[in-house]
Structures are given as C-alpha cells and as structure tokens.
Length: 242
Image 1 (tube, helix red, strand yellow):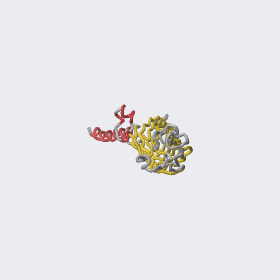
Image 2 (cartoon, one colour):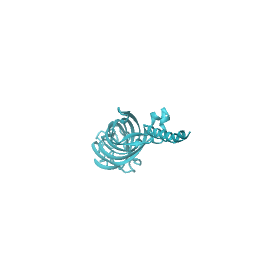
Image 3 (spheres, helix red, strand yellow):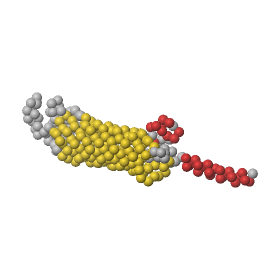
Image 4 (tube, helix red, strand yellow):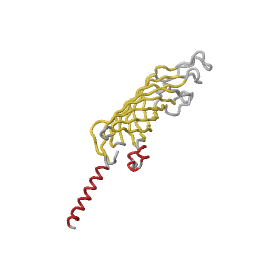
C-alpha cells in the first residue's frame, strides 16, 4: 500500500505531461506566398469590367491562425466602353499596390480537434488592411469622340493619369493545409476574395464634380485569386494539435 500511494502521484504527473505533449504542435513563424486571378471594377464609369491581379506576400504568424503581413500587387483594372458607355468613357489602369494586413482564422476560435467538420474548415479567415495604390492610366478617354451621339468632342473629362491613393483591402478566404514528412504544416493552397476600397479619384482617372456625375461612393475593385504559401523560419509550440 505505501508503494502504491507513492507511485500514484507520479503516475498522474506522467499522464498529465504525456497528455500535454500530445495536445500541442509546433508551427513555423513565417510564410511567403504567390498568386493571382481576375478582378472586377466598380468606379465612376457606368459599367465595370474584368482585369487581372498578381500578388506576393510575406506573413508573420502570431499563432498558426493569426497573422500580420505585407502584400504587394500588380495588375490591370479597367472599366467603361467608349462605344457603349452613355458618356463614351473608358479607362485602363496598370496599377501597383502595397498593403499591411491582419488576418484571423476560424481555427483560433473553435475546438477543431474533436470535430472532423471544424478541422476541415479551420482555415476559413477574414482580414483587413491598409496601404497605398499607385495608379497609371495606359488608356483613357478624355474627350468624347466626334461620332458620339451626345455632345461630340466634349471634354476634357477632369482627372489625373497618374496618382497615389489610400487603399483598404478586406479579405475573406480559405487556407487548405498540406503537411511535410515530419508532420509540420509546410504548404498552403489559398483561395481568396478581396474587396479593395480606394480613397481618392485615381483608380479610374476621372475626377468629376458630383453636379455632373454621380460620384458618392469610393472607387473599388474586387479580386478573386488562388495562390500557394510556403512556411519557413524558426518554430514555436501551439496549444492545439494541428
């Protein structure tokens, strides 16, 4: 009986340590990624149009599911149609941007270790950022053509061909995790939808008075992308099993 009493506390301590060791995982603190996809504009012209976006990113992981990062984009945003737009307006913007972003994933808030469904959707995330967008018009209608049905030759439409505006991206996406041979999360396939709100009149190159054109909402473009991420750097323990 004395031997049993002595061994029982040791057994409990050992079991606790074993449970703790299996209830946590290691993860890499850094990741980088590349991707791209189409975008669609909503600006001061009547109808938007499809363009393209390519991006690169670098992220620091406070946990596997809470990150802060920097994203750089390059692409083309366009809209309008010189023939079919009621005001014969059209633009093509070859833009570049840099933003700082915060992202929060579902896995940080739910207990996915005991649910297959939650484990499959733990990579769903939302995020917000702030940065700058550099606008460069490569094609824009400043004067109505001579064949326009209404006010032919009217112009110039006010605005700048090159400008720098404040940019606020809002992200909603999903990370699908891939593990290496040692059981670490090493790669991610990423699906992302991003709404980009610009504050200024540079995205479409038109800066008209609201007395002549409706101009009440920020110029925006939505990007739909697929990408890959790679995890690297030193590792840290996390309280959940990944």
